Every structure is written in C-alpha cells, then in structure tokens.
Amino acid sequence: MANSQKASSAVAGRYAKALIELAEEKKALDKVAQDLQDLSAMIAGSQDLKLLIRSPMINGTKKEAAIGSLVDQAKFQDITKNFLGVLSRNQRLQDVESIIAAFSAALSKRRGEIAVNVVTAQDMSAKQKKDLEAAISKGVNAKVTVQAKVEPSILGGMIVTVGSHMIDDSVARKLERLKAAMSKESNENTGTDLKEVG
Image 1 (cartoon, rainbow, N blue to C red):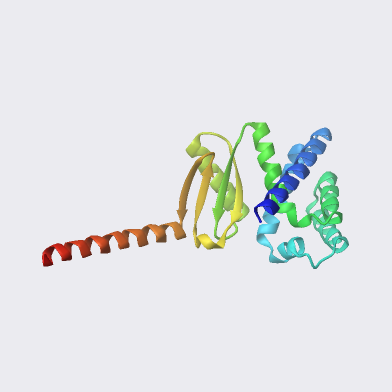
Image 2: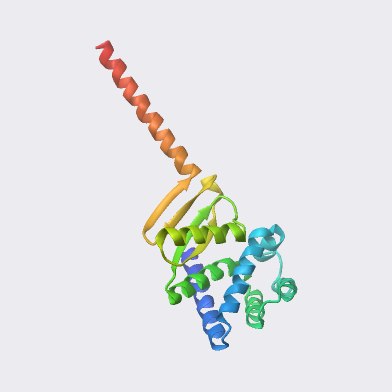
C-alpha cells in the first residue's frame, strides 16, 4: 500500500513538472494554474465529477469527452485541455487531484510561497479555501498556498501543517484529549478512595 502511494506520488510529480514546463514555455503558467485551481473547486463541489474522475468503470474515451466538454464550458487554456486529455487517454485521470496538488506545491516552491497542508472532514468551498489562505498568510506573515485533503475520520475541525509544525484542531483529537482527561481523573479518584479506605 505504501509503495503504491509512493509510486502514485512520483507519477503525480512527473506529470505536474511536465505541465509546469510546458505552461512556462507557452507563457501561460498563471492561467494554467488558475485553470487547475478552478478544476479543483469544481471537483470539490460535484459528486458526479468526482465519480467520473475516480471510477475505473468509465473508460478513457468517455472520460476524455466529458472532461473536454467541461473545460470548453469553463473556457480553460488549450494547454490545460490537452493535458487533461492526455491523462484520460493514459488512464491517469483518477490521479488528477494528486497532480493538481503536486503542481500547486511545485509552483509555490518556485515562487517562494509556503505550502500549507490542511485536512478537513468535508470538502472546502473555493471561498473557504481562499479565506483560510488569507488567515494563515496573516498568521505566518508570508504568502501561502493551501493543499486541501478530505479525511472524514477526523469528524470535524481541521489539521493544519505548515512545514514541520502541525496544529491538530480536529474533533477526533479533541475527543481523544477528553477521553484521556476523563481517564486520568477517574484514576486519580480511584487512588484517593484507596487512601481513604487504608
């Protein structure tokens, strides 16, 4: 499983690097970055689009046609459209979210921005993500880009990682702390009762 994730991450990195180089060569890097940001928001807001991208049951040709129609409506750059077509034909469209994350992280590094990883129980809207980026930028006094990931097991709240510093404000973590505090209090009370009996 770990090797599979590592391989998937390496593939995402290679595709992201190739897209950055091509977009830079065509002097359309900012526009392509905006396309991918818009696509990420579309995926977050549509269960049908998630199913289209992630389902192995839908063949590459159908995916390419559906994605092509979507990007035409969204007026994406030709580079972005062609890139998504390549992913569809290569049966790699299910990796598009990882590729977008890798693209964003690589672009942030080039621009001297700080990449911030945020884990939430549910997808964030584009506005929520933008507001969070603004709040974190203000907090760390630097321009940041948020890499968002959904993990329903945290129940609510969020986990924010900036470099090696992590802030775990998830509901799951709060419940763990509450359980630990209650367990400690219970043990202390038991100790007190034993002393009184002795």
